[in-house]
Length: 323
Image (cartoon, rainbow, N blue to C red; front, side, top):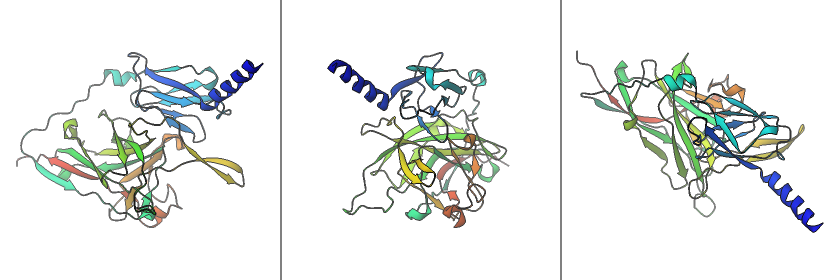
């Protein structure tokens, strides 16, 4: 009887913690890093760098299916009742046949810079959640062939900048940087340039510099988007924490789970003319990109105050043609 009681308690504990599930490439059987897993009504998570995520049937009794997606792979829906320890994703057919043609720009060039726009005003910052993604458009300089050699992402590491003891609170957050082609003026999942992950801590500089000259990112005639996405907090050794965290808020309609915000914060600015910034929340609005303006959210204090752009900086190599 005692053994049965012990096993029952153990089983309940396992169900509560959930099971680890590996997402793998159908052909190579290698893990698909940082794949997106969504399961309705804003819930979801990301696989870690080995393609592993954790899901609990006990915590999500109302979830009947999971939707798996990753750049370059066909989307897949899996019934929660038939989840095993492994999920296989197939590459998109056009990805298998496509070849990225990025001609090497040679010859003389001039270095050009676009300074990042940074500040430390908490009230003018975007509070990122694990599903938020922000994309900023870059166009050719003077309509000449242009390569992006460096990106500079301004951050704010603390809501109040310092704790009561005068020290920044410790955190370790993984971000992903991706590139999107421009389609109908908005970001589209069509860029073949590789994504990059980067861990930011309270010790990081206020502007994160990424040298990308080796990627040969030549800006197309209609521009390109550089995007930053928060993947979540990491362990001290830099491994993505698998479980997505929520805050539970009591409302008139009952208890609701709201995604927690993550550090670092992203400073938005009113110093940039025009609308260059697009946002999307992976688990909402059918994953559609939306221009960050009053149509996106008429109640946004950022938009209403004119802080409607994220001021990513960049360095360029501009290859001017001879007359």
